[in-house]
Length: 341
Image 1 (tube, rainbow, N blue to C red):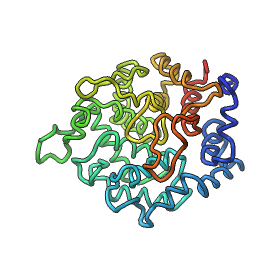
Image 2 (cartoon, helix red, strand yellow):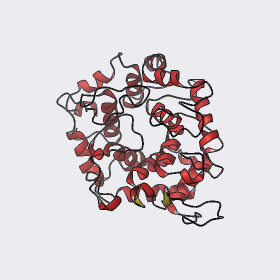
Image 3 (cartoon, rainbow, N blue to C red):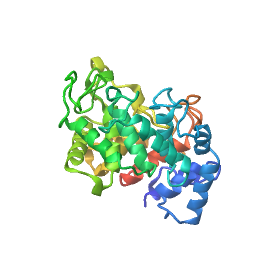
Image 4 (cartoon, one colour):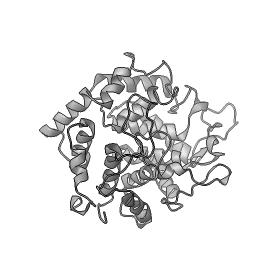
């Protein structure tokens, strides 16, 4: 049994405490697999919308469906529409549970998505980037928001990964091409010195791996496998992915946080690969060991990267045991098989 193998079994009891109904709801749903109509799950879900961070985010939303100011919603970080939608998805919010969330999703698509399926920072194709595309595609899936424009977003994301049908930077007059930020296939990123960016790759793989199998096309399936191959091209525990000026890996790889925006950590890298079906792959063994080793004696994980004061709610003090991070870690370990905890 997974829970009998925990370093300290009190971690689950801690997550189920009623003082944080949002974490309680997600623990019941994701760790204990409660059915959607189970009374305790429904009560926790209702409480999560009434109090806590979901309520704080939705209270801050403009009635039209945006946060901070109208438009594409990338700026200002990390309070505007893009970041609010990403955070709400990670908190387990659902568009079919609150009309405001559905309104926000529709607003995002109306103002950020181009006719060719690119999510943008400024409303123009030149401001698309892999981490944003993956984050928003994954978030809309997690929010349960269905829209006929979303297949185009996945099609663009797949083409961006493989390069199929996408012209090079500077080829004027072409309808679909790379730009300075999203500068080439395999997650090439102008912000990463035009090298392949693992942060972008993780967000994209998360989105592809969450897409229901019936909605995959040969192109998205190919892009999913390309994403897996890239993220496993080096030992994930060491994160020696291409970087600007061949610099050392960002120390943020080993700082687990919540929410997770464009910066990715080792935990999210493993989450994406496990979601893609590689939980038993031996190439993840060192990374899974590292995740386990970060447990404290109570079986909890600390908040090591924080957006405190930068978004619409805080998620706990830095460097203290944290329910959100513990939930993330236990969810990954359970989905990877749960052994050797």
